[in-house]
Image (cartoon, rainbow, N blue to C red; front, top):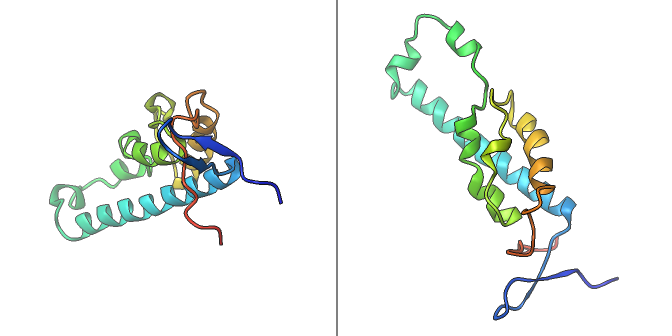
Length: 133
């Protein structure tokens, strides 16, 4: 079995194993899904709990029907997750202007773009492999 590829994090730092692109893509996608699950649960609880009376009592449901499930502001808040896995924050210019229909729609669009960005995974940081199971 060949030794894992190493990425030197800094001159005073030890070598840190670098995850494969596939492993990074899977880990990043999983954490984005977990983030969205919490984010959407928090929003639902706020609306259902009466924390946003003006929203929950809106007379015209068409307002909600025309909005994306994930708007660009929600997506921009994922920047720290992208930075954790790719070593650079989310380039918000890549976010689709009208948002996304689902978390999977966002992942399919942004993760490949960010993983192929010239500044992503450039050796500035490396993602430590949590555990090999």
